[in-house]
Image 1: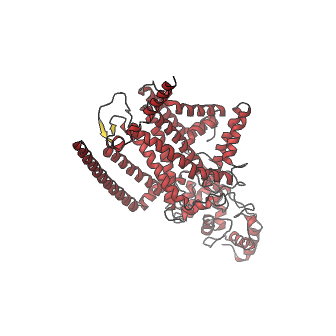
Image 2: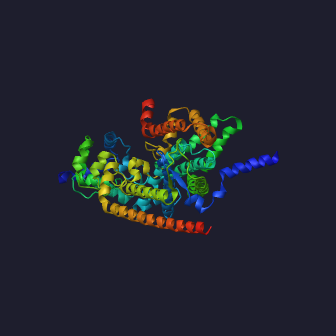
Image 3: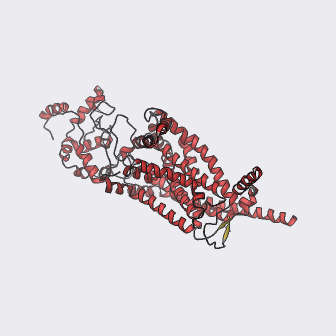
Length: 368
Length: 198
């Protein structure tokens, strides 16, 4: 009985971690990429990796000048933008690439889901991808505070407050748990130096280390298992991963790099917002209008503004659990149904991101 | 032009005035542009001139108070104004129009851009101060401007840089293409040799 169980565990691990494929020939030389109507979906994972590398490069450059203290953070960011040679370009590139990375991550998640690329034996690839999604949101949330301007500090306050509010819907001793979590993240009674130090440590050390580990596992799994079939009726056509698919991937990286650097050079990220939002945070000053999180949190922010808190929290936590359990929950679902679910999710994200403000105005009479 | 004999009276009158911001301009800008703005468009402090914080009247030294009083007496256009509670844009408005004209325009804030003209661009972002006023963006911050206009202006400004980047990226990809193909040929040859030996 015991050995049977051990054998089953061994078989499970062999299927998920086919280390026998760990060779240049298997992972690169002989690797084939299916060609079909959804082949474009294979490129988005690579784009996310590309933007992560851009973030890494520009982030390290910003580190040379950034000062993580409440007294100097804003001034150091202003110094980078106005006085360091190429500083404005690097900072803009960091801001634009972060948004592009999250956009590509959303598309990668939805296409992977629609193509059923999570099915056995790729469960580890999917789960590591979901963890990377959470880590990327963590990057977004922690990075938003670092410039220490009005929108940064006030939006972080709202975000942290949401964690504490979850406590009122929890039973007994658990009710205090969200408050402890908030205090752990915040580090002091209000958002201040301790918060900035913690967010800085998370943004530049802890989350990158977590990303390296998870991304390493994710990419290794992709290479060990090869590309998923992607469609119900394969065309039978394939192309070699090396060098043909990889070259197309790099060419796309080149085009995307040109697009992002053009944006970074010609359209300051801050120009999309009202200028009072970028003034240094003044705890005694008036709070400007239009405090909001980054656009990629709108799918969560507007429902929080419109619906009872517990409904959104329940949906969000349920959503996270469901995302992690996708390979098991949807293992018998057809690709057609998965595509429809992915399309509905994409529609929700687009509508909330582009029209969330209008929807809020419609229901509440004032902009969100 | 104020007659010379009235000048002391005008200065005394100006000195007696408390420091008020002029919210009519801010209200117009917000209504016209739909963007959130604040006093920092023309004042040093975002909450306006009243108070004790840096850039507000309560924080001024004696020398700065003298500068303030001189600026308050700048009724005629074309004077070099250096009011310590105003930023460069605020001072340029008073310097160009003079206090008298400015106070007249106060009741018609939509006339300010025409009075300023399109010649001045204090932040050198390619959009004139008057246009920035209308758009609700900051005339002293080159990263603040109407996004579509900034994009077009900067595309023209950095056209050469962008062309060079396209050339560099193209060359890089061409080189990478050659290296990867060369590596593929090398690996295939090694594989064929190994299979031949086997």
